[in-house]
Length: 64
Image 1 (cartoon, helix red, strand yellow):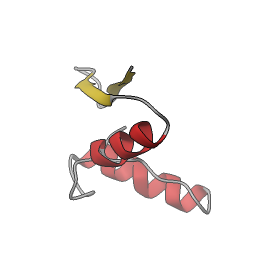
Image 2 (tube, helix red, strand yellow):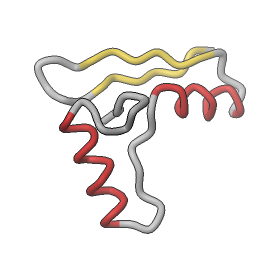
Image 3 (cartoon, helix red, strand yellow):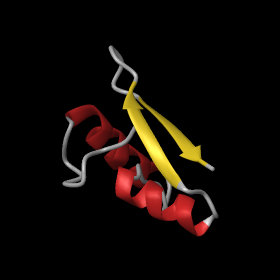
Image 4 (cartoon, helix red, strand yellow):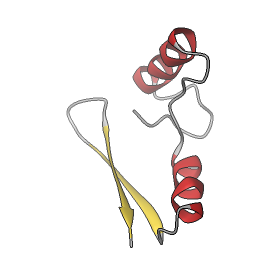
């Protein structure tokens, strides 16, 4: 689940982020920019995301 940068849309990933925060002290769902930053710090060239329609999930892959 990858919420938009506003962290409140789309609804399902935003609810997932809220549930993760409530179930674990450090739980979260990361935005594309946060995932990109993590990937670059780990040595990857970038991050690509693509909606896994018709589900609310998102495919994420780190590029070399």
